[in-house]
Length: 87
Image 1: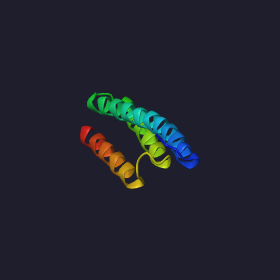
Image 2 (image 1 turned 135 degrees about the vertical axis):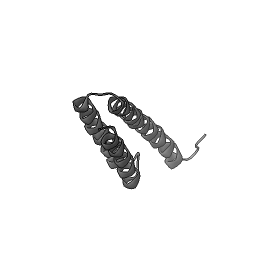
Image 3 (image 1 turned 180 degrees about the vertical axis):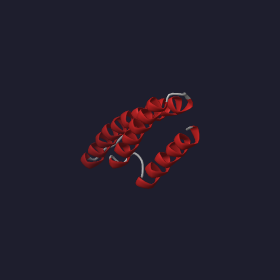
Image 4 (image 1 turned 90 degrees about the vertical axis):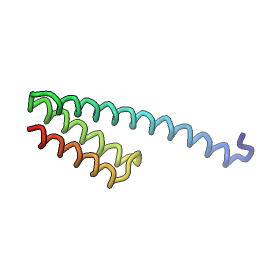
């Protein structure tokens, strides 16, 4: 366990950040899952809506530092490729 005041503060900060990152990552995974299900379906409007929502969550996660900018772009690109392949 942390002994110094600064180490205790660092431990508290790590816990808060971990909880925040887990929330963002969970929302991200859910949005991507719904987008993939929508892309697998036949309705193009639902697929484009799911893709748009997933892209928004991916970009938001990147802005919060959960994902890197490059990884976010790569994930969006892969989803977009699935979208064009499906249509």
